[in-house]
Length: 90
Image (cartoon, rainbow, N blue to C red; front, side):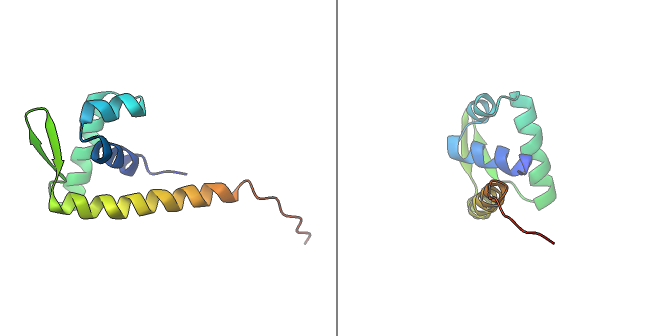
């Protein structure tokens, strides 16, 4: 289970690069840009400051990263449940 846009956002935030994030995620750089643009539209605020080839998180971007990271960790913990075996008979 995952949320693609949150995964893309967190990867860009961690790499501070759209192109590095694209390479890690195995998608195109324009696809990364599109995901981030849609998130920024949905939130109504810029998540990154883009200066030349450098990307920095805005204050809102920092807060959004912390929450997004927590959500992705929860998804991972949910995924781990599918490997638990139970012997429940109804």
